[in-house]
Length: 126
Image (cartoon, rainbow, N blue to C red; front, side, top):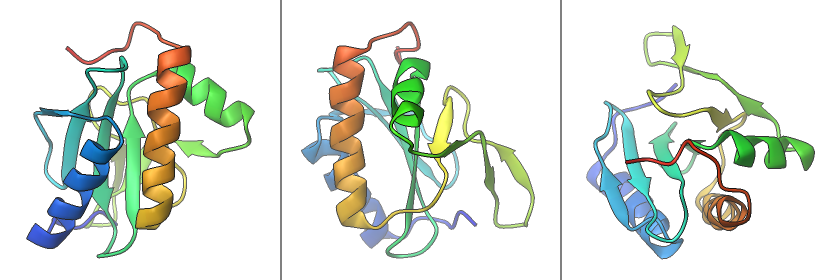
């Protein structure tokens, strides 16, 4: 379940986003941080399931197709702290099916921005 973000977790997610090309902070939703890139037409949302497990949602359907073509499972809903499920976040297409650790998060963010640069579509954040 998505948890409220602590200061430490927020800082770690902000750094991971910035280090991997997501240099524009976007309006967020509770439990999520949102970013875009000036280098690629992609928006991402980051959430935590604990201090060391993270979720990534993103805006491009073409990137989703590329990832599923590589065998990376994706979902359209996430579990909330009250046990219910809802669509990922407004504007996002898909979320990685399983939570990932920080090192993997950094690799995924790098892959997302690279894939977005080579497969742009019309779902770019404004």
